[in-house]
Length: 432
Image (cartoon, rainbow, N blue to C red; front, side):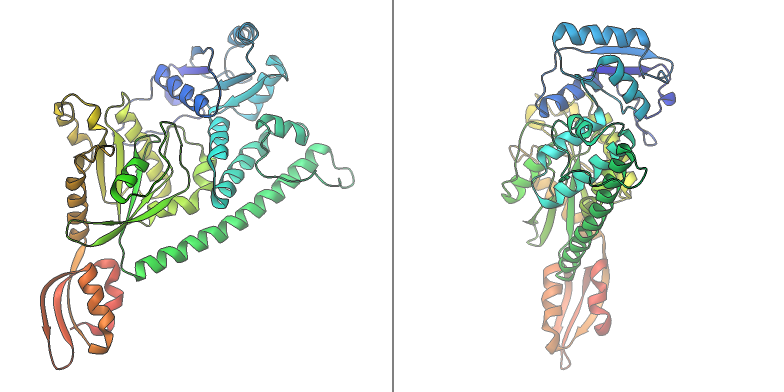
Protein backbone atom coordinates (compact mmCIF):
# COMPACT_ATOMS: atom_id res chain seq x y z
CA UNK A 1 0.00 0.00 0.00
CA UNK A 2 1.17 3.53 -0.74
CA UNK A 3 0.12 6.62 1.18
CA UNK A 4 1.06 10.24 0.53
CA UNK A 5 0.79 12.95 3.16
CA UNK A 6 1.05 16.50 1.89
CA UNK A 7 2.65 19.11 4.11
CA UNK A 8 -0.19 21.41 3.07
CA UNK A 9 -3.25 19.17 2.55
CA UNK A 10 -5.06 21.97 0.73
CA UNK A 11 -2.67 21.40 -2.19
CA UNK A 12 -3.79 17.82 -2.80
CA UNK A 13 -5.36 17.49 -6.22
CA UNK A 14 -7.97 15.09 -4.88
CA UNK A 15 -8.43 16.00 -1.21
CA UNK A 16 -11.42 15.22 1.00
CA UNK A 17 -13.46 18.38 1.46
CA UNK A 18 -14.12 19.00 5.14
CA UNK A 19 -17.38 20.60 6.22
CA UNK A 20 -17.44 23.81 8.25
CA UNK A 21 -16.33 23.03 11.77
CA UNK A 22 -14.84 19.71 10.70
CA UNK A 23 -11.78 18.22 12.30
CA UNK A 24 -8.36 18.09 10.64
CA UNK A 25 -7.55 15.83 7.72
CA UNK A 26 -7.03 12.14 8.54
CA UNK A 27 -3.55 11.15 9.78
CA UNK A 28 -1.84 9.12 7.08
CA UNK A 29 -1.42 6.14 9.44
CA UNK A 30 -5.17 6.01 10.13
CA UNK A 31 -6.04 6.40 6.48
CA UNK A 32 -3.71 3.54 5.55
CA UNK A 33 -5.19 1.38 8.32
CA UNK A 34 -8.59 1.91 6.72
CA UNK A 35 -7.13 1.15 3.30
CA UNK A 36 -5.85 -2.16 4.71
CA UNK A 37 -9.41 -2.95 5.86
CA UNK A 38 -10.66 -2.20 2.37
CA UNK A 39 -7.99 -4.47 0.88
CA UNK A 40 -8.94 -7.30 3.25
CA UNK A 41 -12.61 -6.82 2.38
CA UNK A 42 -11.66 -7.20 -1.29
CA UNK A 43 -9.85 -10.46 -0.51
CA UNK A 44 -6.28 -9.11 -0.61
CA UNK A 45 -3.50 -9.74 1.90
CA UNK A 46 -1.46 -6.67 2.84
CA UNK A 47 2.26 -7.41 3.08
CA UNK A 48 3.72 -3.91 3.39
CA UNK A 49 3.26 -0.18 3.03
CA UNK A 50 5.18 2.88 1.95
CA UNK A 51 4.55 6.45 3.12
CA UNK A 52 5.89 9.64 1.57
CA UNK A 53 5.43 13.21 2.75
CA UNK A 54 5.50 15.74 -0.07
CA UNK A 55 4.89 19.42 -0.71
CA UNK A 56 2.78 18.37 -3.70
CA UNK A 57 2.24 15.22 -5.79
CA UNK A 58 4.80 14.47 -8.50
CA UNK A 59 3.17 15.47 -11.83
CA UNK A 60 4.30 12.24 -13.50
CA UNK A 61 4.23 9.47 -10.92
CA UNK A 62 2.35 10.99 -7.92
CA UNK A 63 5.17 9.87 -5.60
CA UNK A 64 8.81 10.84 -6.17
CA UNK A 65 11.01 8.85 -8.54
CA UNK A 66 13.09 7.55 -5.62
CA UNK A 67 9.97 6.24 -3.91
CA UNK A 68 8.87 4.58 -7.14
CA UNK A 69 12.13 2.63 -7.19
CA UNK A 70 11.76 1.78 -3.48
CA UNK A 71 8.23 0.58 -4.21
CA UNK A 72 9.39 -1.52 -7.16
CA UNK A 73 12.03 -3.20 -5.00
CA UNK A 74 9.52 -3.92 -2.24
CA UNK A 75 7.17 -5.45 -4.79
CA UNK A 76 9.94 -7.79 -5.95
CA UNK A 77 11.05 -8.71 -2.42
CA UNK A 78 7.52 -9.54 -1.24
CA UNK A 79 6.46 -11.16 -4.52
CA UNK A 80 3.45 -8.85 -4.54
CA UNK A 81 1.04 -8.82 -7.45
CA UNK A 82 -0.96 -5.71 -6.53
CA UNK A 83 -0.08 -2.16 -5.47
CA UNK A 84 -2.76 0.07 -3.92
CA UNK A 85 -2.53 3.86 -3.59
CA UNK A 86 -4.55 5.61 -0.88
CA UNK A 87 -5.52 8.45 -3.22
CA UNK A 88 -7.16 8.55 -6.60
CA UNK A 89 -4.56 8.49 -9.35
CA UNK A 90 -4.97 10.56 -12.48
CA UNK A 91 -4.86 8.74 -15.84
CA UNK A 92 -1.33 10.05 -16.36
CA UNK A 93 -0.16 8.85 -12.93
CA UNK A 94 -1.65 5.45 -13.64
CA UNK A 95 0.08 5.12 -17.02
CA UNK A 96 3.49 6.22 -15.74
CA UNK A 97 3.37 3.94 -12.70
CA UNK A 98 2.25 0.94 -14.76
CA UNK A 99 5.21 1.43 -17.09
CA UNK A 100 7.71 1.66 -14.22
CA UNK A 101 6.28 -1.17 -12.11
CA UNK A 102 5.65 -3.52 -15.01
CA UNK A 103 2.54 -4.88 -16.72
CA UNK A 104 2.45 -7.91 -14.42
CA UNK A 105 1.60 -5.67 -11.45
CA UNK A 106 -2.02 -4.78 -10.91
CA UNK A 107 -2.22 -1.10 -9.94
CA UNK A 108 -5.19 0.10 -7.91
CA UNK A 109 -6.04 3.35 -6.19
CA UNK A 110 -8.55 3.83 -3.38
CA UNK A 111 -11.33 4.59 -5.84
CA UNK A 112 -10.85 1.49 -7.99
CA UNK A 113 -10.55 -0.66 -4.85
CA UNK A 114 -13.84 0.62 -3.46
CA UNK A 115 -15.48 0.10 -6.86
CA UNK A 116 -14.24 -3.49 -6.87
CA UNK A 117 -15.67 -4.09 -3.38
CA UNK A 118 -19.01 -2.65 -4.47
CA UNK A 119 -18.97 -4.95 -7.51
CA UNK A 120 -18.44 -7.97 -5.24
CA UNK A 121 -21.31 -6.96 -2.93
CA UNK A 122 -23.91 -5.87 -5.49
CA UNK A 123 -26.52 -8.61 -5.11
CA UNK A 124 -29.47 -7.02 -6.91
CA UNK A 125 -29.96 -5.79 -10.46
CA UNK A 126 -30.19 -2.21 -9.22
CA UNK A 127 -26.95 -2.48 -7.29
CA UNK A 128 -25.18 -4.14 -10.20
CA UNK A 129 -26.30 -1.40 -12.61
CA UNK A 130 -25.14 1.35 -10.28
CA UNK A 131 -21.72 -0.21 -9.70
CA UNK A 132 -21.20 -0.97 -13.38
CA UNK A 133 -21.91 2.64 -14.31
CA UNK A 134 -19.47 3.91 -11.70
CA UNK A 135 -16.80 1.47 -12.90
CA UNK A 136 -17.07 2.50 -16.54
CA UNK A 137 -17.11 6.23 -15.79
CA UNK A 138 -13.95 5.77 -13.74
CA UNK A 139 -12.20 3.62 -16.37
CA UNK A 140 -13.09 5.46 -19.55
CA UNK A 141 -10.48 8.26 -19.22
CA UNK A 142 -7.91 5.63 -18.16
CA UNK A 143 -8.41 3.35 -21.14
CA UNK A 144 -5.09 3.21 -22.95
CA UNK A 145 -4.96 -0.28 -24.40
CA UNK A 146 -7.39 -2.87 -25.68
CA UNK A 147 -10.48 -4.27 -23.94
CA UNK A 148 -8.38 -7.05 -22.39
CA UNK A 149 -6.43 -4.42 -20.44
CA UNK A 150 -9.69 -3.19 -18.95
CA UNK A 151 -10.58 -6.69 -17.79
CA UNK A 152 -7.11 -7.16 -16.28
CA UNK A 153 -7.42 -3.86 -14.46
CA UNK A 154 -10.69 -4.92 -12.81
CA UNK A 155 -9.48 -8.30 -11.67
CA UNK A 156 -11.47 -10.21 -14.26
CA UNK A 157 -14.76 -8.40 -13.69
CA UNK A 158 -15.45 -6.00 -16.49
CA UNK A 159 -18.59 -4.61 -14.91
CA UNK A 160 -21.07 -6.42 -17.07
CA UNK A 161 -19.95 -5.74 -20.61
CA UNK A 162 -20.62 -8.57 -22.99
CA UNK A 163 -19.07 -9.67 -26.23
CA UNK A 164 -16.27 -8.02 -28.12
CA UNK A 165 -15.85 -4.46 -29.20
CA UNK A 166 -17.58 -4.85 -32.53
CA UNK A 167 -16.42 -3.80 -35.97
CA UNK A 168 -14.28 -0.71 -36.21
CA UNK A 169 -15.30 2.10 -38.49
CA UNK A 170 -13.09 3.60 -41.22
CA UNK A 171 -9.87 4.93 -39.74
CA UNK A 172 -10.92 4.04 -36.19
CA UNK A 173 -8.22 2.79 -33.83
CA UNK A 174 -8.78 0.01 -31.33
CA UNK A 175 -8.69 2.59 -28.52
CA UNK A 176 -11.32 4.73 -30.24
CA UNK A 177 -13.49 1.65 -30.75
CA UNK A 178 -13.22 0.70 -27.09
CA UNK A 179 -14.03 4.25 -26.00
CA UNK A 180 -17.05 4.38 -28.28
CA UNK A 181 -18.45 1.04 -27.09
CA UNK A 182 -17.95 1.94 -23.43
CA UNK A 183 -19.62 5.30 -24.05
CA UNK A 184 -22.62 3.49 -25.54
CA UNK A 185 -22.74 1.15 -22.54
CA UNK A 186 -22.64 4.13 -20.14
CA UNK A 187 -25.56 5.74 -21.98
CA UNK A 188 -27.59 2.50 -21.72
CA UNK A 189 -26.81 2.13 -18.01
CA UNK A 190 -27.96 5.69 -17.35
CA UNK A 191 -31.25 4.97 -19.14
CA UNK A 192 -31.74 1.78 -17.12
CA UNK A 193 -31.02 3.62 -13.88
CA UNK A 194 -33.51 6.34 -14.75
CA UNK A 195 -36.11 3.57 -14.92
CA UNK A 196 -34.94 2.37 -11.50
CA UNK A 197 -35.15 5.89 -10.16
CA UNK A 198 -38.70 6.31 -11.48
CA UNK A 199 -39.68 2.96 -9.94
CA UNK A 200 -38.33 4.02 -6.55
CA UNK A 201 -40.12 7.34 -6.87
CA UNK A 202 -43.45 5.56 -7.42
CA UNK A 203 -42.83 3.43 -4.33
CA UNK A 204 -42.12 6.52 -2.22
CA UNK A 205 -45.25 8.20 -3.55
CA UNK A 206 -47.39 5.20 -2.53
CA UNK A 207 -45.80 5.18 0.93
CA UNK A 208 -46.56 8.85 1.42
CA UNK A 209 -50.10 8.38 0.21
CA UNK A 210 -50.49 5.70 2.87
CA UNK A 211 -49.33 8.24 5.45
CA UNK A 212 -46.18 6.44 6.53
CA UNK A 213 -43.24 8.63 7.63
CA UNK A 214 -39.77 7.47 6.63
CA UNK A 215 -36.55 7.52 8.62
CA UNK A 216 -33.26 6.89 6.79
CA UNK A 217 -30.36 5.28 8.63
CA UNK A 218 -27.06 6.79 7.50
CA UNK A 219 -23.50 6.52 8.73
CA UNK A 220 -19.94 5.52 8.06
CA UNK A 221 -19.45 2.03 6.71
CA UNK A 222 -19.34 -0.61 9.48
CA UNK A 223 -20.83 1.78 12.07
CA UNK A 224 -23.69 -0.63 12.83
CA UNK A 225 -26.54 0.55 10.59
CA UNK A 226 -27.70 -2.92 9.55
CA UNK A 227 -27.41 -4.17 13.14
CA UNK A 228 -29.67 -1.31 14.23
CA UNK A 229 -32.30 -2.09 11.60
CA UNK A 230 -32.22 -5.77 12.57
CA UNK A 231 -32.68 -4.92 16.25
CA UNK A 232 -35.56 -2.53 15.56
CA UNK A 233 -37.47 -4.68 13.08
CA UNK A 234 -36.08 -8.22 12.90
CA UNK A 235 -35.10 -7.42 9.31
CA UNK A 236 -32.42 -10.14 9.03
CA UNK A 237 -30.14 -7.82 7.06
CA UNK A 238 -26.65 -9.23 6.50
CA UNK A 239 -24.31 -8.10 9.27
CA UNK A 240 -20.56 -8.60 8.92
CA UNK A 241 -17.54 -6.96 10.48
CA UNK A 242 -16.45 -5.73 7.06
CA UNK A 243 -16.57 -2.47 5.17
CA UNK A 244 -19.53 -2.19 2.77
CA UNK A 245 -21.01 -5.57 3.77
CA UNK A 246 -24.40 -4.42 2.43
CA UNK A 247 -25.15 -2.11 -0.50
CA UNK A 248 -28.80 -2.55 -1.34
CA UNK A 249 -31.25 -0.50 0.76
CA UNK A 250 -33.64 -2.39 3.02
CA UNK A 251 -36.89 -0.84 4.30
CA UNK A 252 -38.87 -2.20 7.28
CA UNK A 253 -41.80 -1.09 9.44
CA UNK A 254 -41.11 -0.15 13.06
CA UNK A 255 -43.67 0.64 15.77
CA UNK A 256 -42.97 3.78 17.84
CA UNK A 257 -43.78 3.98 21.59
CA UNK A 258 -47.11 5.71 20.89
CA UNK A 259 -48.20 2.81 18.65
CA UNK A 260 -47.74 4.63 15.33
CA UNK A 261 -45.76 3.01 12.53
CA UNK A 262 -42.79 4.39 10.59
CA UNK A 263 -40.55 3.05 7.87
CA UNK A 264 -36.82 2.69 8.52
CA UNK A 265 -34.48 2.42 5.53
CA UNK A 266 -30.92 1.16 5.85
CA UNK A 267 -28.73 2.74 3.17
CA UNK A 268 -25.23 2.23 1.78
CA UNK A 269 -22.43 3.24 4.12
CA UNK A 270 -20.22 6.26 3.53
CA UNK A 271 -16.44 6.54 3.76
CA UNK A 272 -13.78 9.24 3.50
CA UNK A 273 -12.80 9.98 -0.11
CA UNK A 274 -15.98 8.27 -1.31
CA UNK A 275 -15.62 8.12 -5.11
CA UNK A 276 -17.68 10.78 -6.84
CA UNK A 277 -18.62 8.19 -9.47
CA UNK A 278 -20.37 6.14 -6.79
CA UNK A 279 -22.27 9.09 -5.37
CA UNK A 280 -23.55 9.93 -8.86
CA UNK A 281 -24.31 6.33 -9.84
CA UNK A 282 -26.13 5.61 -6.57
CA UNK A 283 -28.41 8.62 -6.96
CA UNK A 284 -31.55 6.46 -7.09
CA UNK A 285 -30.59 4.73 -3.84
CA UNK A 286 -29.44 7.89 -2.09
CA UNK A 287 -32.75 9.58 -2.87
CA UNK A 288 -34.14 7.37 -0.09
CA UNK A 289 -32.07 9.63 2.17
CA UNK A 290 -32.97 12.96 0.58
CA UNK A 291 -36.70 12.11 0.63
CA UNK A 292 -36.76 10.87 4.24
CA UNK A 293 -38.56 12.80 6.98
CA UNK A 294 -35.77 12.21 9.51
CA UNK A 295 -32.23 10.83 9.53
CA UNK A 296 -30.61 8.59 12.10
CA UNK A 297 -26.84 9.04 11.87
CA UNK A 298 -25.28 5.90 13.35
CA UNK A 299 -21.81 6.69 14.68
CA UNK A 300 -19.34 4.19 16.12
CA UNK A 301 -18.48 6.24 19.21
CA UNK A 302 -15.69 3.80 20.13
CA UNK A 303 -13.73 4.39 16.93
CA UNK A 304 -10.52 6.44 17.25
CA UNK A 305 -11.59 8.54 14.27
CA UNK A 306 -15.28 8.90 15.21
CA UNK A 307 -15.29 12.66 14.70
CA UNK A 308 -13.59 12.42 11.33
CA UNK A 309 -16.00 9.65 10.30
CA UNK A 310 -18.90 11.94 11.25
CA UNK A 311 -17.35 14.70 9.13
CA UNK A 312 -17.10 12.34 6.15
CA UNK A 313 -20.79 11.45 6.52
CA UNK A 314 -21.77 15.12 6.70
CA UNK A 315 -19.71 15.81 3.58
CA UNK A 316 -21.58 13.16 1.61
CA UNK A 317 -24.96 14.31 2.96
CA UNK A 318 -24.11 17.82 1.79
CA UNK A 319 -23.16 16.47 -1.63
CA UNK A 320 -26.56 14.78 -2.07
CA UNK A 321 -28.55 17.69 -0.59
CA UNK A 322 -29.57 16.12 2.73
CA UNK A 323 -27.32 17.90 5.21
CA UNK A 324 -30.17 20.07 6.59
CA UNK A 325 -32.53 17.17 7.36
CA UNK A 326 -33.63 16.81 11.01
CA UNK A 327 -31.11 14.32 12.41
CA UNK A 328 -30.66 12.15 15.48
CA UNK A 329 -27.12 10.95 16.18
CA UNK A 330 -27.07 7.38 17.50
CA UNK A 331 -23.80 7.07 19.42
CA UNK A 332 -23.45 3.35 18.85
CA UNK A 333 -21.45 0.47 20.38
CA UNK A 334 -21.65 1.66 24.00
CA UNK A 335 -21.52 -2.02 24.95
CA UNK A 336 -17.79 -1.79 24.22
CA UNK A 337 -17.25 1.05 26.70
CA UNK A 338 -16.29 0.48 30.32
CA UNK A 339 -18.01 3.74 31.30
CA UNK A 340 -20.47 6.12 29.63
CA UNK A 341 -18.52 9.08 31.03
CA UNK A 342 -16.50 8.96 27.80
CA UNK A 343 -19.63 9.98 25.87
CA UNK A 344 -20.61 12.85 28.18
CA UNK A 345 -17.89 15.15 26.84
CA UNK A 346 -18.75 14.33 23.22
CA UNK A 347 -22.52 14.79 23.21
CA UNK A 348 -22.41 18.47 22.33
CA UNK A 349 -20.41 17.67 19.19
CA UNK A 350 -23.37 15.93 17.50
CA UNK A 351 -27.02 16.90 16.87
CA UNK A 352 -29.62 15.22 19.12
CA UNK A 353 -27.28 12.54 20.49
CA UNK A 354 -28.56 9.28 21.98
CA UNK A 355 -26.20 6.65 23.38
CA UNK A 356 -27.18 3.17 22.14
CA UNK A 357 -25.99 -0.33 21.51
CA UNK A 358 -27.59 -1.73 18.39
CA UNK A 359 -26.15 -5.10 19.36
CA UNK A 360 -27.71 -5.36 22.85
CA UNK A 361 -30.65 -2.98 22.41
CA UNK A 362 -29.50 -0.58 25.12
CA UNK A 363 -30.84 2.96 24.60
CA UNK A 364 -33.19 2.06 21.75
CA UNK A 365 -36.28 3.06 23.75
CA UNK A 366 -34.80 6.55 24.17
CA UNK A 367 -33.92 6.65 20.47
CA UNK A 368 -37.45 5.77 19.36
CA UNK A 369 -38.99 8.23 21.83
CA UNK A 370 -36.79 11.05 20.52
CA UNK A 371 -37.67 10.19 16.91
CA UNK A 372 -41.35 10.13 17.84
CA UNK A 373 -41.05 13.57 19.51
CA UNK A 374 -39.25 14.99 16.48
CA UNK A 375 -41.91 13.68 14.10
CA UNK A 376 -44.62 15.17 16.29
CA UNK A 377 -42.76 18.51 16.32
CA UNK A 378 -43.10 18.55 12.54
CA UNK A 379 -46.90 18.39 12.82
CA UNK A 380 -49.20 21.38 12.24
CA UNK A 381 -52.63 22.22 13.69
CA UNK A 382 -55.61 20.92 11.73
CA UNK A 383 -59.35 21.48 12.18
CA UNK A 384 -61.49 19.39 9.79
CA UNK A 385 -65.06 18.23 9.31
CA UNK A 386 -64.87 14.87 7.55
CA UNK A 387 -68.03 13.60 5.79
CA UNK A 388 -69.07 10.14 6.89
CA UNK A 389 -68.49 8.80 3.38
CA UNK A 390 -64.80 9.79 3.70
CA UNK A 391 -64.11 7.49 6.62
CA UNK A 392 -60.60 6.73 5.30
CA UNK A 393 -59.57 10.27 6.33
CA UNK A 394 -60.71 9.63 9.90
CA UNK A 395 -58.62 6.44 9.90
CA UNK A 396 -55.66 8.39 8.54
CA UNK A 397 -56.00 10.97 11.31
CA UNK A 398 -56.08 8.20 13.92
CA UNK A 399 -53.03 6.49 12.43
CA UNK A 400 -50.83 9.51 11.80
CA UNK A 401 -52.22 12.44 13.75
CA UNK A 402 -52.63 13.61 17.33
CA UNK A 403 -56.32 14.08 18.13
CA UNK A 404 -57.30 16.73 20.69
CA UNK A 405 -61.05 16.73 20.00
CA UNK A 406 -63.28 14.32 18.06
CA UNK A 407 -67.04 14.71 17.86
CA UNK A 408 -69.71 13.29 15.60
CA UNK A 409 -72.04 15.88 14.09
CA UNK A 410 -74.94 15.76 11.71
CA UNK A 411 -72.65 16.46 8.75
CA UNK A 412 -69.69 14.26 9.66
CA UNK A 413 -66.81 13.77 12.10
CA UNK A 414 -65.31 16.98 13.46
CA UNK A 415 -61.65 16.54 14.47
CA UNK A 416 -59.22 19.05 15.93
CA UNK A 417 -55.62 18.01 16.31
CA UNK A 418 -52.24 17.94 14.62
CA UNK A 419 -51.04 16.20 11.45
CA UNK A 420 -47.71 15.85 9.62
CA UNK A 421 -47.29 18.64 7.08
CA UNK A 422 -46.75 16.17 4.26
CA UNK A 423 -50.32 14.83 4.71
CA UNK A 424 -52.19 18.14 4.63
CA UNK A 425 -53.10 17.71 0.96
CA UNK A 426 -55.35 14.78 1.92
CA UNK A 427 -57.57 17.16 3.92
CA UNK A 428 -57.77 20.19 1.62
CA UNK A 429 -61.42 19.50 0.71
CA UNK A 430 -62.63 19.09 4.33
CA UNK A 431 -60.90 21.93 6.19
CA UNK A 432 -63.26 23.29 8.87
